[in-house]
Amino acid sequence: MIDSGLAGCTALVTGGGTGIGHATALRLLEQGAIVTIAGRRADVLEDSAARLRAKVAGAELRVQQCDVTVEAEVERAVQVAAGAGGRLDIAVANAGTGVPGPILSLTADHWRYACDLNIMGTAFTIKHAALAMQQHGGSIVAISSGAGFQMPKFMATYGTTKAGLEMLVRCAAIELAPFAIRVNTIRPGFIPTEGALLGWTDDEQKVVIGHTPLDRTGFPEDIGDAVLYFCSKQAAWVTGQTLSVDGGLDLPRGEDFEALCRRMYGDELMDRVTGTGARAG
Image (cartoon, rainbow, N blue to C red; front, side, top):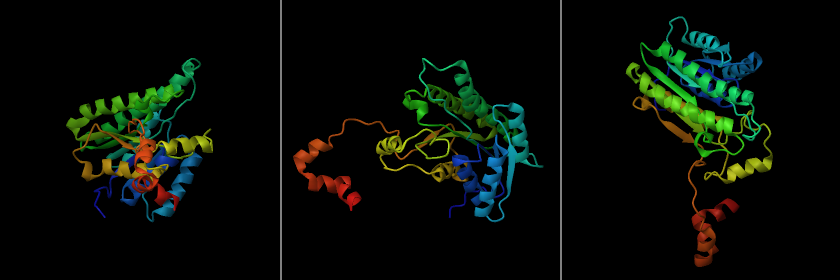
């Protein structure tokens, strides 16, 4: 196994009670990090903590109730994660949300809710994490979305605020570089977490999978692995970057000439080169 250099490092993961946050905490704990998971619901956090401790023997894990839209609560969560020594090495700004709806009917409250959580919550996390890293450096990773650049229809609050989050990360990467603090972003593809599945039908999920070249949903652990990379010593010279972990979902698509090629070259050859026969078998 590659040595990530994370043993004994202190880490804060917001939105750590479910989905990507939970999987990220698991990956960090497996590497020997001392992890604090933060979130709004104490019961969800405690359940997450119990499952994490069951998976990682001897895990050094802390739980802190925190609403990332309240700066004082973020500051306190960072203090808990930093521990008595006041040193924080890793922060993962994972808490986020989207409010679906047509622009013509979205209210000020809809926009404020998305802005407060996706932009302000991330800004507070970056600010207070960086203050705790200022003397020794560290790694901050924010979780964005392909919606931040793909213009999602009827999800303008999400796309707009995730785009803002990515600009925030790039600005932070420049400002914090003199302190050896690296700031990066991950864009997950379709991950069937508790939040992502709300309101989705099976058919709608199949459409997204059909648009994904690797032909499956992702798993929260896929994003946890990417976070692990950005936090590790292997990414010591990487900052201000956005990594899509989405099975190829964000790749621009041109025209599909498969039908033409089948007419020209026959189904036998095309089944072989597209893997159709292998998948059917």
